[in-house]
Length: 210
Image (tube, rainbow, N blue to C red; front, side):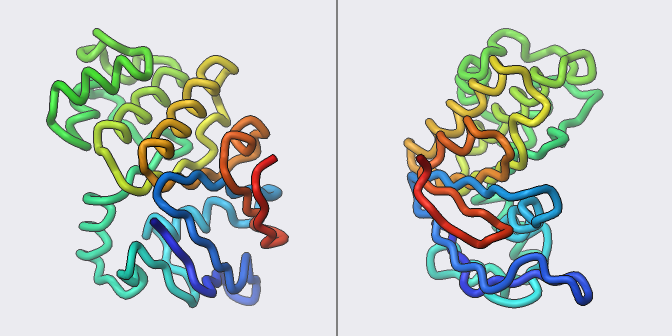
């Protein structure tokens, strides 16, 4: 579970969002929506402890993550967080296996994850030879292998074709159904509709997904 209390982020005199109160329980999936520049990715990065909010608190269970030291933030990300970046954040010159080893060196789990994303048997291929859709599948397999309690995804279908997009949406939904708290920043209506709730970062309106 991830929760925010009166979370605010400002850059100089510009305030992206103010006093955001959100709760994403385990087993639920939340979409962050809003126009470009509204602060979806910034909010996601704050939840992932990659950026600091200007004020307010972020809680994982009863622990206030905003009070963690730099080392504590690294340990939290390593232990609890799976992040699906928009640019995939893979090691281009490494093999699929070497990229998955960053999350967990467990060949059985890796094989299961690759089968789940449709890349079974391709462990020795190098990432730079693969398409964008295939690279996103590797990034998703890495999140699966890590078995995180919190999964954050930044525009995970933004550069994908329809087939790859459906696979990513379905996998994130399945991860939530298996007990993860999942937060997705998206413009995609299919992603939004797969979520349990939708938070408009610009208007700060929270609603159930239709």
